[in-house]
Each structure stands twice: as C-alpha cells, then as structure tokens.
Amino acid sequence: MQVTFLGTGTSQGIPVIGCNCEVCSSGDPRDKRLRTALMLEKGKDRLVIDTGPDFRQQMLASNVKSLSGVLLTHEHNDHIAGLDDLRSFNFMSKKAVDIWAENRVINVLKRQYPYVFADKKYPGTPELVLHEINQGKIRIGAFEIEPIRLYHYKLPVLGFRIDDVAFLTDVSEIPPESIQKLTGLKLLIIDALRIREHISHFNLEQALDVANKLKPEQTRFIHISHHLGLHANVNSKLPAHIGPAYDGLSMSI
Image (cartoon, rainbow, N blue to C red):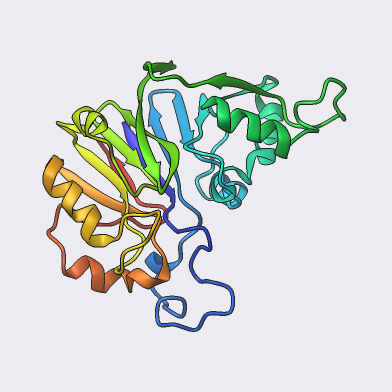
C-alpha cells in the first residue's frame, strides 16, 4: 500500500497569512504545509481522507485522476471545504463519488452544501453519494477500514485504521477502547500541533507518548502549526523512525 501525505498543516497552513516567523519564512519546502489530508493507494484503488480547502491543489500536485472513495474525519472547515472540487472526478468517471462520514457530519454537509444535495440540482454541481459510518468496519475496494473513536476536545471525531496504518488527526484524547484497536501498527500518523499544550490537539510530547505506548514501526506527525518549529530542527531531535511528515511524502507500507 502506498501512503501519500497530501497536506500536513493545521487549519491556517504554513506559511500563515501575515506571519514572518522563521518557519513561515523558511526556504525549506518541507516547511510549506497545506491543510492535512492523506491518500492511500492499493492496486487500482485510491482512497482520500479529508477534503480541505487545498484539495484541488493537492489533487493536481499528485496527478490524481480517479478516486475509489473519500473518508471524512469530522466537519471542521479545514477538512471539508474542498468538497465541491470532487465534481472533477464526476466529469472524468461519469459517476458519483462515494463519501463516508458519521451521521452528524453528513448533516453538516447537507447544510453547508445545499445545492449539492437539493432535489432539483443546478447542472454541473457535484454528484456525491453519502454513506453513514457506524462503528463497524468498512470495505472500499481493496481497503478494509476500521473507524477509531477519538475526541477533538469535546467533539467526537474519527480516526481510521487501514491495514497496519492508522490516521489520527485533530485529536486530544484517545479512549482506552480505541487504543486497543491501534496495536501492531506499521505506521502511526498522528496529530502533533505544536510544542505547548493545546485544548483540542495533541502537542509534540503527547503525540510522542502515544507513539511510545503503541510502539508502531514508524510514526509521522501531521496537523503541524508554525509553532512546532522548523522541520529540520524538530526532525533532528527525534529517533529515525519518528518524525514530522511533510507535504508530498510518499511511503510504501
């Protein structure tokens, strides 16, 4: 399975508008971060997790021409604001795109994109089929996906385990029953927003604590803000199997 980090930044991305800090001013391309999203490929099947406001740019950068489906972790704008750009896949495939999300998220999508889900649709609007995620496993083409309950402060959100890869973004708490579903991982992808603690995201220390508890073969951090520091500096202080991801990083698992 091929894992590609489409974006690794927090809701503001990096550089942040109007900021001249050393991270936002860095010439290292690893310090340029679009909003967090992930792509998984297995054979002819291709799955995307989250469609934030940079979705169009991410699809163009990775030259993506087909999707088997989309998973949504939660309804915050930096994870769903690119949904309209899925219509390009309608035009190419001549069929609807399948979206999987919790019922609460589906209801938000219907309110935020009423023209997409209207009974009488304007021509050319996206064709999307919404599938509700419960607690059971999901099969999308070659992918078997296990939803993982997480908390983003008090908001229940979803992470996903796909084979031996786990994607846990926008998380400040992992319940004990979810920890049990995350053993034996080859790759842990986890929120590490910054150095200081945050009310709704793991900071670096908390993300490291989870990695040390789960002991995956590799850990890569995502949803990174400019407050975490320069990629090179952070990476140099961590073991070889643990470190920040960066946009465009592709790994074979």
